[in-house]
Image 1 (cartoon, rainbow, N blue to C red):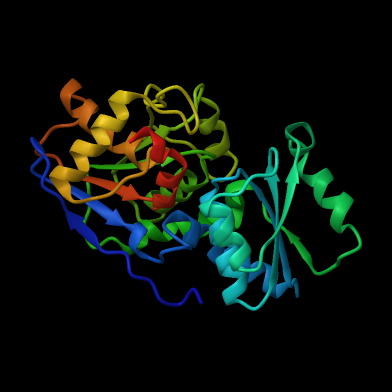
Image 2: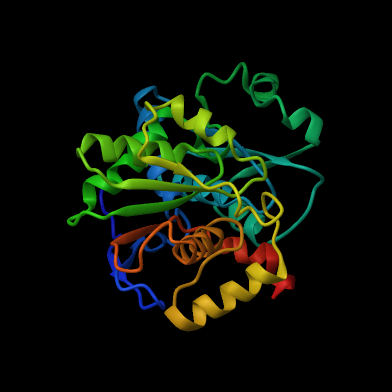
Length: 289
């Protein structure tokens, strides 16, 4: 299921940029979208190699990762289960998970903190069950994300990505090193206090001065937003025809515009934004619009 990929690079018109491009990973698949596709590619391969037929993972009630895992498991003919953080709810995302056959186990936030313990409590006797961390964070995920760089046919002065766990950023930095590029990688943590992202990246690949971490674009924290960000999304979409979600990609695009205003990047430099998908995250914030 992971043999074909459609992820073009498109130039977008956004004042005052002359060379702003987007790697459209959001077009890879409607449900296994963006970096979720790339993260799950080698996770699923490893699970199959180990004769595992049951993916067990973790996420919040509006998690794109849960939908992606459910869809990937269904298409691969294997089972999936998710521990969902918080009280039992119903929403569009969890409906999709259920339709793809995923079993949902709602878990209080205290228990959720120890994911390996949850896995052992429920699946210690199931030798076909395979642990998939929240967001797909793993060495295998970085291998898939590194392939973004290998697919590029041109070089860029700057590459931008949003970050939740740092796994995608680690893969991109690994790819930049593998290709011997001088490109600067700008990472936009979407959580408050995002300095830990650098430590997470270091777990998978050596750090370098090509990595630039910008911690001031979280807009209050993970899944938090402000009227300013919502206004930006509306204007950005109207100007470019490109959708972004309030949790990840909108914060990245806002950062690109703001950093150009500050003079950190020049309007004539070649800039590539990695659109990591996640557009269904809009459903979780529809009341903000």
